[in-house]
Structures are given as structure tokens and as C-alpha cells.
Length: 113
Length: 111
Image 1 (cartoon, chains in turn brown, cyan):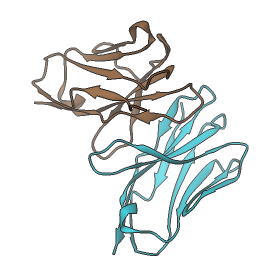
Image 2: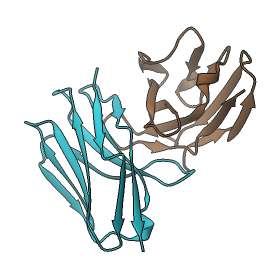
Image 3: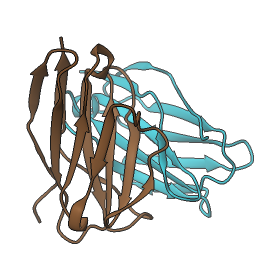
Image 4: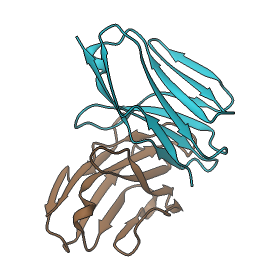
């Protein structure tokens, strides 16, 4: 089966600019996660969707980050405006449901200058 | 919220030796504990997981043990090989299955 797809793979922007990331989960997976992985650290959950509803976004910096999963399939994560500390790899993962293995996408490496 | 501590941050072993990575968690409601392997520049991939109703699980050269009372779980890799070199992450999922990851252990297996 096809894996989790993400785009772009790399993005370089200047601080205060905006950026958007896209994720296409594995077909049929109801649960979708966005993680931020700063170099040398473990992934940190930003937001979790169950179909098109938000399960948890307690660690999402809502003053600058937003995410949506229209129609319960693809998802976009946006940062507006970006800060230097947002430089990280943004990983999308999907799972058949909230109780099983997560499958990760290749990630988007964001560099904020 | 959940807090997951992982040790050591770096582990260097000779090929054929065993490697052990330990994690502790804070939320007694956590009941699902996966371990992920992340090779340089690649995505994390699940290598083994354990649920709170089981004390130990094995899959060929890897095993995971869970001590619910002490709130810690460990990854054991036997007969290590150079291709085992990677960063390993533990995670703990709360009752609502929102995962918290450890900071990772960089395993280096010397030929």
C-alpha cells in the first residue's frame, strides 16, 4: 500500500513569512497526527485529528500555527508568521485508529532564516 | 501531562553485544508503549510495541519489557549488528492515546 505522503520535502523561508505543509495519509486511516521534531529531540505532537475533527491540539501554538483536515483525508499545517525557533522537521503520521501503530511520512524540513 | 524520560542519550557497543535502552513515564494511565527506530534523514518506523496488560514481548533479536508498578519500560537488542545503528525513540500513550516521545537514544554499533 502507498505510504504517507508529504510535501514539500524541504522549505527555506525568512522569519515572519508564512509557510504551509501538506499531508496525504494512508487510504482509510482515520487518525492523522502532525509532529514537530527539532534536531536532537523526539517528535512532539502538535495536533491529532480523528477523521475531520480535532482530538487534541493542546501543544499547538495557536497564535501562529493552524491545521485543518477538510473531508477527513488530506491535511494542511500552516505557520504564520514563522519564527527562528520553528526550524524543525514536521512529520505527518496516520493510523487506522487511535489505538494502533502510526505510520510516518518522510517529513518536511523547515529552515527559518 | 505525560513526561517520558529516556536513557542513555548515546550508546556505543561492539557488534554482537547487547544493547539496553530504558524509559520512564509519569502518567499511570498510559497503556501503550511503542518503540521507533529512526535512521539518519529518514522517518521513524515502529519496531516493537507493548500494551499495559503484557510484561514482556519479543520479536527475534529485540524485546521490550514493561514494569507498570515502577512505570518504566526497556528495549533490549541482542546480537547487535551495524545496521542496528540509528536513533531509537520510546513513547508512552495516555488513555486517550495521545503519544509522548522520549528524547531518543543514538545507538552506534561498531563492526
